[in-house]
Amino acid sequence: MLISSRAIISQSFSLYTKHLSLFLRASLLLFLPSLLIVLSRVASISLFQNGVVPVSLNVGIFFILFLFFSIIAIWYTLLLTRVVAARYVGDNTTSITTALKETRPLVFSAIGASILATLISIGGFFLFFIPGFIFSLWFIFALYAIAIDKQKAIASLKTSKHLVQGRWWAVLWRFLVPLVLFVFLAFLVQTVLKFLVTSTLVGILPDTIAFIILSSLTYLTASLFAPFTTTAQTILYLSLKQSASES
Image (cartoon, rainbow, N blue to C red):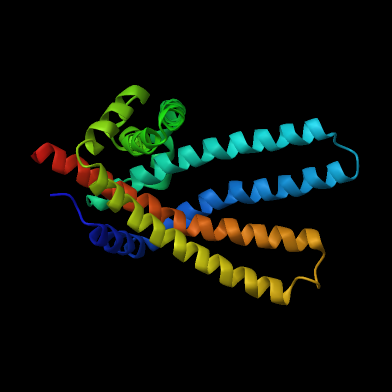
């Protein structure tokens, strides 16, 4: 039987609190590249405004940063998924360092799967729009198949489609409910922190420093809540695998 959305949420909170120090380290691992991007953006904007860097180079820097963060985000998803899956089944031996080493060879497969899934989904949106939504959910668990089962790009897409097909609405509900809840909580915390910082620091500190602080808080909050969404989707993937094997 497929796990309920309520159980996914409760088990995600339980796993997060039980392994709080582990997930905080994982959040820090995601936050540090984000902070680097904030500082790089400030530097590139400053150089552009002072006429040191032309528009084309500034756009190029932004594109490079976007690619860099995309690869980091994919690798982070792989390693966190692997750690969460291990903790979920009671294996406490897989550390962040171990997961980093284990998922490094999987990054290229994950990039390939992400590109293929995106292209297929975009093609679906261009056809009749609705197929785009169907394809997007079909392939949403490709990275989890790569991270947990070490599958290649094509195999991971087939696995994800097989797990979702025939229960699309049930999977969509269990995927969206935890995601919307955790995104809302993250947004709520971000809003409160931004209000506190804006009301106390803006006008006192230089605009650049205020921008760095506000952007860093945004990324920090997102990094702290990222394990929640990854945990929920990992739990759902494992439940889909188990129910598929039982049927």
